[in-house]
Image (cartoon, rainbow, N blue to C red; front, side):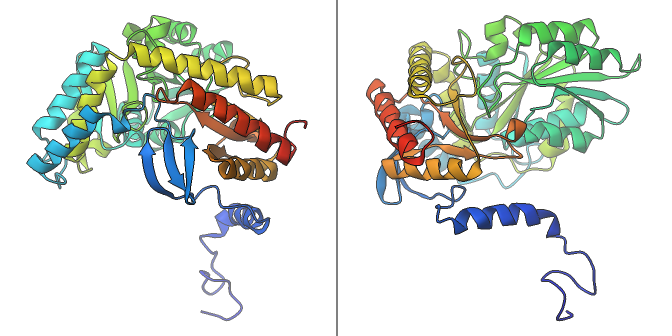
Length: 413
């Protein structure tokens, strides 16, 4: 290497890491201010769905997506322990080879019962579910119309499949319809939507959007990752609450939120859906989930079918936190509670990081979300409520926000 070349560059060639220079500078500037790195927090011990030891301190968890608090459910844990003992640590194979155990069939059966649908397909992660389904059903020459605020896994699925991507303004029904009407006649069309958008916690107007999609001859895929288990009479998500679940061709979800473990899935009533097991690359070429994981997921999903009381309590928690933070003077991502996510908008990244650290010192963990992951270049403190948070914990959380907000200057003293 020539002495005047930067690390990673040879003979004047471009350093492949140079594309990350802005992010590197942002992170170094943040750490130079003395703030603890908000993106590498270690939980030394997890005590329950709502508490952990962080930096040696008992901390309330308000940023885990553990919406229904199933991670420590005794039946769920016992199912995982039994499967681990009976079947071992992993499958070491793909679902189309040696990686389908009895537990994989059982978790797919649980999903079919939960959604009352004909087909269910389980992936090793929620990311892979979107990546696999979208890239397989929409390829070159097809069109995908999607919300501009769609999750990274949705965008990556579009890129992998090489379809024409047509984004529209967030939750804008008219803009979506205009994009659909411009698509050439006879082309394959897929509309991709989310029930709850993870950054601001806002809900899509699915009833209207699905109608527009169907009126224009498009298939519909809805990602219910942040609403499954919680929203809807039976916890099936925004599609159920909007009364249009039967009009959705594909529903994508994840096990890493309300279900409390890891994995992803797609459910569908399409009569040809089972061929996806042979043509979907992120399914075919990935080792299947460990037996202990699918056992915990199946048990959790069956319990969520009867989780009405937990859903009602989670709604009460969301309403109370949203109202309390509004009364304290914080600016929130939605005018009213729409989901289990309450996003608190910060003036900028520096003060957002300072507020995050002040809350952590109070004994509260939330997510610090920053651009480019956030819409409109916002910095957010994202709160994810849990059905296991007590009413008393929510009041404690509000006190922590008040003290930290005044100390950092986010709200008036």
